[in-house]
Image: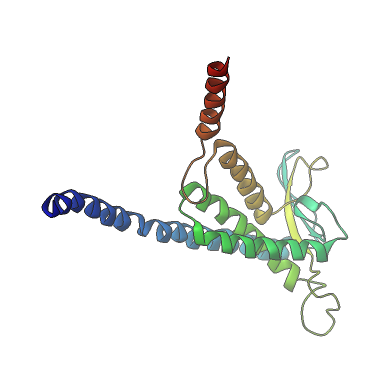
Length: 215
């Protein structure tokens, strides 16, 4: 009996250890995606804002494609796409909460699509949050009376006069938000599992079978 138990138990133990060995690197790989995409988004946002401030601030809009795309520097005290101006401190707090929530969620991250999604959201949130904390009129030095109320630099204007001005961080946040909705709709979970609704369907089928048997 002991021999049979040992023989029968060996493959199970081996499978478990092998599965654990294969599963262990997954979180590290997903975190690597975060560690790659987030700095890229953040650096692109910071770099483009710095360039346009040095070249276009106070200048006429730079028309790239007439009627379709131009670059024009504005300072936005509201949310993405110049929404909610006058509520800067609120959006600063929201952005901070989003960053903290994403970092906490990343501990359970085992899904590559969700890793990309959270990377886009985090990179964009950090980009605009940096403006909220350090750009005028925020800051920590003399002459900066409004901490956490800095204005975000927006400069990309599509369909001028018909669409709000935005920046790289805004586009990253929007793309991440769209991906999050799609993944949630398809049932993909942060931990790498997928909810197909089979459990609910099975429950309905069981209920229907019970009603038929009672009838």
